[in-house]
Length: 198
Image (cartoon, rainbow, N blue to C red):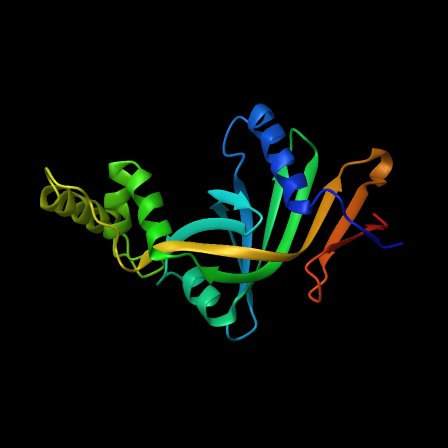
């Protein structure tokens, strides 16, 4: 049975994040990001979700990486959070777009300097002959930017996944889990909730 949601699924997600911060020792903001290539083949990897609000879920990467190329080409993606300590999972599906340059600049400026230099040094997803090549790039860029702020590379920035479907899963005894799914009504922007069989 469908009914209109009072507490939004984003609010419910933020509540789960707060619980995860208290119980997960490392990376409570980690999620699997799934994308699809132009050949229809899926690809998945872990990303750190650095922002979540009613606009969606924000993460940062190299635009030229495999995931960046797939996000720019296909515009659809999914995230999956799983917190072992909570025995909870949240699946998020929706459309993806780049965040503004100003938002990317602000996040980049707040990163550790070493991570800023790493964003310049890494041609993410491209062939690397050996580890030494990457380390040499880091040394060269460290010298180049000595005594000055490290600017955000133009090929690095954020994406926001704007959800139209979220599913909340919590572990139940004997595999009788709870599954609640929320679907966005495009006509009026409201969320519809229904319970699923486990």
